[in-house]
Image 1 (tube, rainbow, N blue to C red):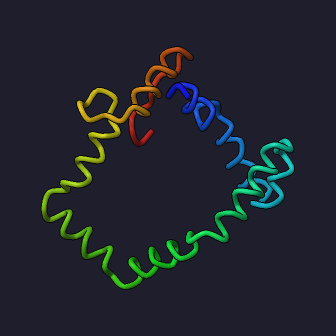
Image 2: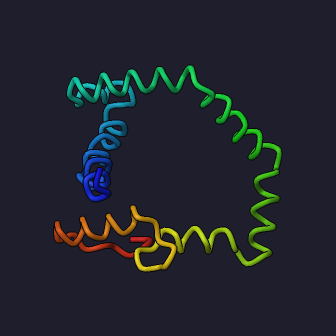
Length: 123
């Protein structure tokens, strides 16, 4: 799949925005009424797959990491070191950086083709 097709289909079409607006306005489960049958079926099947996977275990591990203070300790060490991991992550998210991810570059091409101006962070 071309990266441009993926980003357009996954989120640049605005469909995700519509879905999350429906979650907010209708509620999580009632929001399914605004979806077509393909999305409803896919959502149901994938949700059931996640429920029987190790995803609940991963959520519990994440909660424990936060509750125990381990995440805060690692983040404090990250801050004291000048945010090296965060700096690398931000570089990867950039469109022009040498280590930019293909998805960031595809997003830039789709925005250009659709005439969408990229907004600054925090706007």
